[in-house]
Each structure stands twice: as structure tokens, then as C-alpha cells.
Length: 218
Image 1: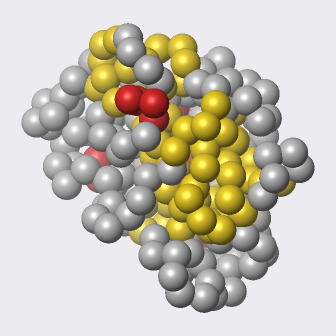
Image 2: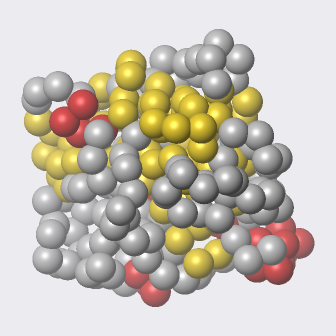
């Protein structure tokens, strides 16, 4: 309950949709595989159905859409280039089954400027309705932004399944893609970054029961 109140007091919850317009998607540099998945519901039927396909993993990792891949379990194996020195990174994940919200944040993110030294990221904001305008599409997981908890910037992000930053660890995750952000959660890298917002690791999201979208699964 203390973590829940801190999440609310520090304005980490956005009960809305992450608008991807004008943002640049990060580029997968290495790693990734498992099921190269395509979530099938594009109209809001409430289905988690998906199909595993073939082709290069970049087709599933370098755009924010209904395609996703699964990351490795070692820091530095699945690495994204954010495209500029970002202060935060937005993580877009897909959901292939319940329970929620654990299934929606089942990864840990690490940040770096040299792909050698990695800092574990902390969660700084969660968009409860994901990024799809149709809130009946259930596979569209919570979008969450991470940072270092300081004003430090970073160029690269490594995603692992499970780990200390996840709410659930069942041996895999479903990553749609990443985006680099400025300190104010915008994507234009031309302005000078502002001081980072307060970052908290202990979200306690499992007890929130907060999303209108998720109520349909109860």
C-alpha cells in the first residue's frame, strides 16, 4: 500500500494512451528471438490470440505495431540503439495471456552509453491504456518509461526477460519495441534535457487493479 500511494503521489500513472506520433523507434542491434509473434486482434474482440512467424527479428522489433519478439536472459545480449542520448526510454510490450498486470511488465531494462557498463533502469511512468486508440484491444500492454533515476543520459538499452525489475518471470517476455525519450517524456532530441523526475522501483502494480482495459479480463 505504501508503494501504491507513492506511485500515485509522484504522478507516475497516466490513465491514458501513449501517443507515438512523431517519435522515432529504437533499432535492435543484437539478440532477440523466440516466438516472432503477431498479435491477431486489430478490432477489439478481446482476444489474446497470436501467431509465431518467420523472417528477420528486426521486422518484429523496429516498429511499434502488433508484432513482437522475445528477449534473451543475459544483460547485453538483446540491445537497442535509441538513436540519441536519451534521458528515458519507453518500453512497449505485448500481452499473450493473463494474469495482469504481471504479464505486462515481465522484463528488466538496463541502460548504457558504451554497451559494456550497464545500469539497471527504474520505472518512472506507466501509461495504463498502452498505445492503441482502441482500448478493447487487450494485447496492447501497459507502456512504461524507464530511466537511471538521475539526469544521466544513455544511448543503449538492453532488455532481459524476468529479472529484478519485472512483475512476473515465466521464462519469456513479448517486446514490441522501444523509444528514446527526453526528460519530459517527449521524443524530440533537439532540446536540452530537463531534470529527471523522481524514479521509484517498487511500483507495487500487482495490487493496483487500475486499468479500464484490464477489467474486461476479470
